[in-house]
Amino acid sequence: MYLKQVLGILFDNQLYIKLSKCQFGVLSVRYLGHLISSEGVAVDPAKIQAVQNWLVLTSPKGVRGFLGLAGYYRKFVRGFGIIAAPLTKLLTKDGFCWYEDSLLAFNKLKQALISPPVLRLPNFSQ
Image 1 (cartoon, helix red, strand yellow):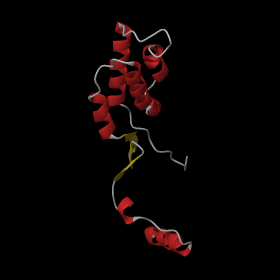
Image 2: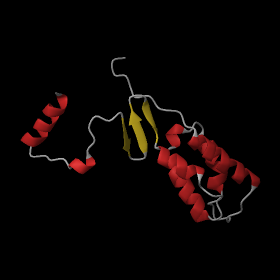
Image 3: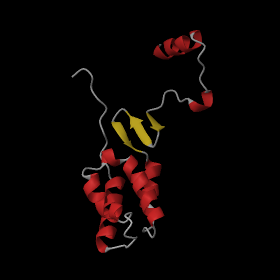
Image 4: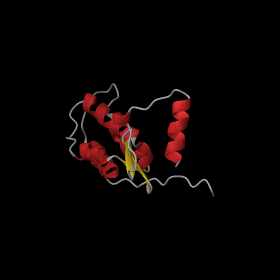
C-alpha cells in the first residue's frame, strides 16, 4: 500500500526511478559501504573481507589508503584516534619508519574493523 502511494507521488511529480537500482521486499540493503537492516547499521561484509586481506603497510601511500578506509568506519571503532595515532605518525615529514607500535596499531585497527558492533537505528517514539 505504501509502495503504491510513494510510486504514485513520484509519478505525479514526474520523478522516475531506475528499476535496476531498486530493491523491493528485501530484509537488508547495502548502501555506501554499510549494511542496513531491521537490526541496525553494520559494516558491509565485502569491506570487512578487504580489511582482513590487507597486507602489512610498506609505504606512506599504503598507510593513507588504509587510514582512508578505516576512517570511513571510525564511528564503529571506540577510541579510533588513539588506536590510529602510531599509523598517522608515519605520515609526518620525518619519514616513513615502521616500528613495533605501528604494527600493533595496524593489527589492532584491523581487528576492530573486522568485529565492529552493529549500530541500532533510532527509536523516534522514545
